[in-house]
Length: 106
Image (cartoon, rainbow, N blue to C red):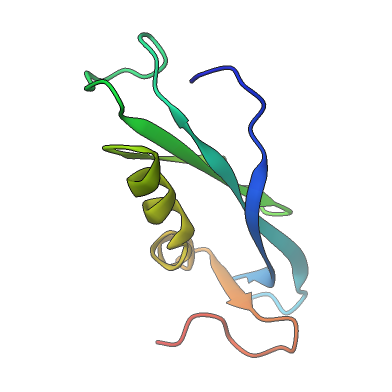
């Protein structure tokens, strides 16, 4: 990963609870600006211009997800579409808007 100052460029605030529990906790999902990959920064072969973008989960015991694209625009596009990532996490958690409505409609 290229060592530059990377800033949050977007965020969404939600609530979550582990499946089967009623207590809801705050969750902030942050998209951190895209970065160009550098040799040795990842364990796969990539072309010049390939980029990554990170999704951070503040409040949820979930590691940062790094998403990769052919360039910074594609990496950002893939990262901001957070619903597929939350659907994957919905096996363990329920997600809600601040008003209590379910975030993911099934």
